[in-house]
Image (cartoon, rainbow, N blue to C red; front, side, top):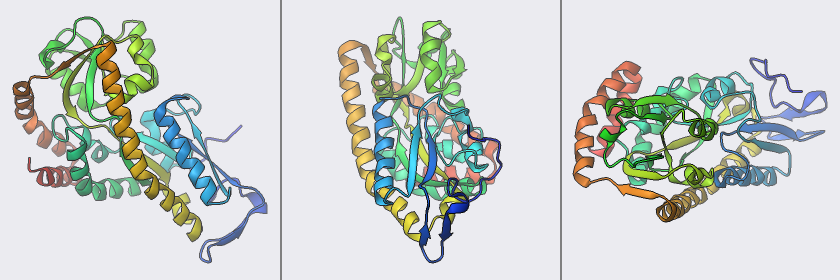
Length: 339
């Protein structure tokens, strides 16, 4: 059984006394492959799980099997998705998938894509992330983590539920609704609902038990997780995008031999476009499927304009609670988007 109590692992777990590493020269001799774990919050067979398995397979191939990364799906590791940054920075796992909302409590600047009605679609996210990435990396580095990749998780995020569908956000009144982030919780509460925070894996049971009536998530997660079985409707007002980050322990990353680190970087870079295309297709396919089996309500454009106006003041208030670093990041994003 693994020891998950270490505050820092010795460089590149799995080498042991038999392995020799000379990082400066970029050469080494391994008696066995380095075995790493990559914890994610999707289940086995999910289309997005398959993307991450393909990435780790690519890294394994590029390193001739010397770096063997195993994707650990929801429930396999003794960590919650909300703990991704601290457990990774402390060296309790080598790689982790971090969703913007789940890590809002530990890395607030990474949650900016989840601000209501600021970054509403893939195009806005791509523009804004160019300005935001340096701010996120600075914070993550201070927490012992390094970002390998950001990706649109299942953009955009929207509300889905059972019973009578929403036709405007005010219809949240009297509902218990799942928000995957504090910011989604603020949307629910602003319009009269009660917010419940649940990770992806906790949603089905909560729905079946009647703990929640509605959830915020992305379209591809609805179909990929099989949630159409217990959901009746979707309300599409595109309040924000959903970004997730592939993170690696910073000490392990910087300690890799030069050629191995280059192989990891190349795999990530070359897979990024494929990730984007696959996610867009997954989102488009999911929306088409849901329109056939669920009631989908597209928000009135005038309501969307009203929502954007109602939430503009929130962005600066939210940033001020995070301090100067978060305020600077939000200002850069607003400037990039012209908002």
